[in-house]
Amino acid sequence: MPPRRAHLPLSFLATLLLAGAHLGAATQEEKDSHPSLNNEDPAVRKLIETLKTEKGAVVRRGTLSVLANLGPKAKSAVPVIIPLMKAEREQGSLDLDFPAQGALVCIGADAVPALIQVVEDVKNTYLFRFSAIDALRQIASNRVPEAKARQVALPHIGPSGG
Image 1 (cartoon, rainbow, N blue to C red):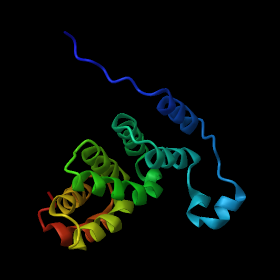
Image 2 (cartoon, helix red, strand yellow):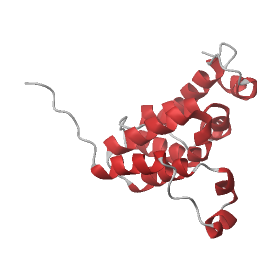
Image 3 (cartoon, rainbow, N blue to C red):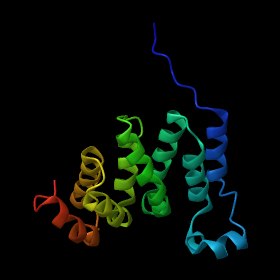
Image 4 (tube, one colour):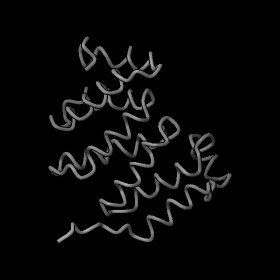
């Protein structure tokens, strides 16, 4: 019997279409109350909203994949991805941990300060801290010109960088 394929919910497909079309621009009032929205891509905002509201793992994995593909443009998603990764690790689930970690690695240098905070907070679980260390190691070992990320991350992961 062929493996059963997970069907993407229609709401997720609609979200991707809206994000791709750059619809849903923030109002001036939203921009004034959240200065980070002034430079944020409307597609990234829509994807962040999807991560916050959708509970299905398939939708969230797809959203994280799109954010990973956006790379540094998705830097405003870091404050949403980190708690998502933490919740997954604390629940003993890996459904979203690896996609979340991958998105942070693709975002690159802009994710480094948040990942360092995770590592340095001894209240975080060992597994959550390990995920952050692994993400830092991957960012530091990437062959892309992110000297700032490398300089900041290496003291936290050791001189080998990988």
